[in-house]
Structure formats: structure tokens, C-alpha cells
Length: 233
Image (cartoon, rainbow, N blue to C red; front, side, top):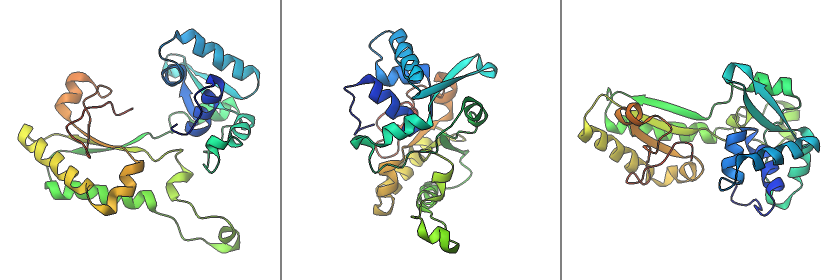
């Protein structure tokens, strides 16, 4: 959201849903105005729904969690803004039934559970594997495909490339530091610079996740492992 005008809450709300496809009311509130009451965010989303720009569904199997998404009309409106020009929005969800069937199928992170059964260098080599997946573009087949601009394969499935999380276990604190050090060393290579600019890669000991929970700020960015962050940041 670095290039979206945040001066208008309505504009920002639609831009978020256009780029990220779906979000809960709480997620939208954290982006739009965490310093105000959540009722203001609910009223804003309700207003956009009346205007036909967004819609919502309620998930009975998830404690009646409400999920918002941009309509086709909303995507069309937002795609014409200068802030989003040149960006390829994910395929929109045209109706609540399609949105309901798609929830659960959205993958937000790749998780690598490391039990110290391989050396630190082999663990770090997984960064190269994911970088290859990130840039993989299938060879075009047929004349129709040749007329279309090529795109990476992952864009067919995700609005954004899922972040990469390493869960480290099977060794003590010294071993954890050695493995994080190997990931950091791999992250400094020029071949991975483009991938790491676009995809967050974080690591955390399993013991910290069990003690504080996976959403806690216990994750260490491989490029700066002295920092701590939530994997959802």
C-alpha cells in the first residue's frame, strides 16, 4: 500500500480489497484507522457496500466471521486510479457465493518446518528454490498464449506471493542461531536480492511459537535477525 493515497478512507479501503482480494472487518480496521473506534470502519464498509463497490459474506463455520471483498465494479473503479495503474489486480470475486467457496483456499504463507535433520547450508538452499518458484513463468503454448503477456505461474493462484516462514526445532539455542546465520548469509547473495525485496522471509524457534503463539512478534527476518516481528506484518 506504499503508493496509495491514504487521505481518503473510502479510497484506501477499496484499494486494499482490490489488491488483497479479501479481508475481515478487524483487518480492515487495522489498516484504515486503528486509532479510532471500529464502528467507524464498519460504517465505512457498509457505505461502500451500498454504493456497490464492495460486498461481504459471513462464515458460520468460523464463529460468524465477516469477510469483505471488492465487487467487479469496485475493481474497475480502483484500477483506473493513478496509484494502482500498472498493477495487475487479482481476479475479482463476483458474488458472495463465489467468495464463500474461495475462503480457506487462500494460502498466505509457505511454512518450512526444520527439525535439524539436514545441515544449515541445505536449509539455506531452500531460499533459492522458492526464488525459482517466484520467477517461474511457463512457456507459452499456442498462438493465443503468444498474444498475451507472460506472467509468473504463482499469479494464477495468489494475489501476492505467500511469505516464507521457517519453523526451527530439533536443536538447542546455539543450533538455532547457526541455522538462522546460514539463512542470513544466503539472503545476502545478489541472486536472491529481487526475491527478498518482494517476499518476507522469517524464522522462529518452535519453542517461542509454543510459548507465545504464532501471531506474536517472535519471528526474525532473515535479512535482519536481530529484529522481531509478527509474521503478519
